[in-house]
Amino acid sequence: MSINILLHKSFHYVFKDNKDNSRYKSLNLYFVVIILDIDECEDSHPCHQLCFNTNGSYTCGCKSGYELTNANDCIDIDECQRGRCSRCTNWPGSFKCSCDDGYRLNLTALNVCDSGYL
Ligand SMILES: [Ca+2]
Image (cartoon, rainbow, N blue to C red; front, side, top):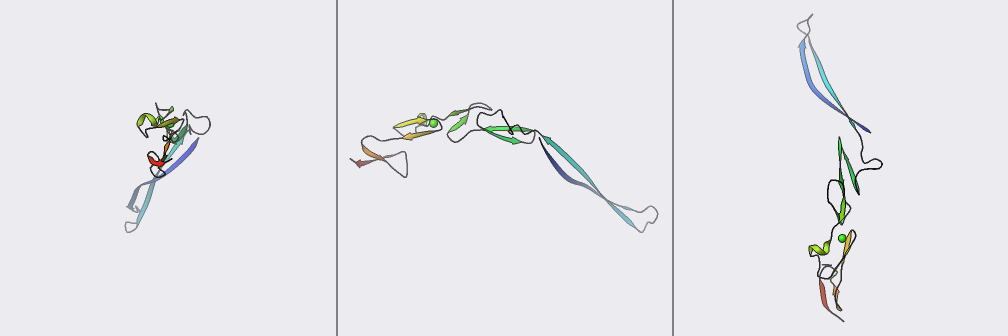
């Protein structure tokens, strides 16, 4: 559990002294807001992969190559189904493009095969 203390200055009063009307007194009134937060991500969290604590709640996230299927669970992104390259092999959290014989993967584009490599 974490405790966040937020200090807010709310009011500044200036008033005359009751006994001496030529004197002024001032008063600063502060409000203190204390927020108690349970860190749901601290130990065993409800998220499948990544957990991000927020004030009063949490959100789940996924590692690179995965996406949320609901509020907590991640599944592999099938990059091959999304047309990342024509000859594609899907891997958990990743994918690999490859080329036919005589072609080589372009090292800049990484999803294009260049010809002329026999
Ligand atoms: Ca994948």
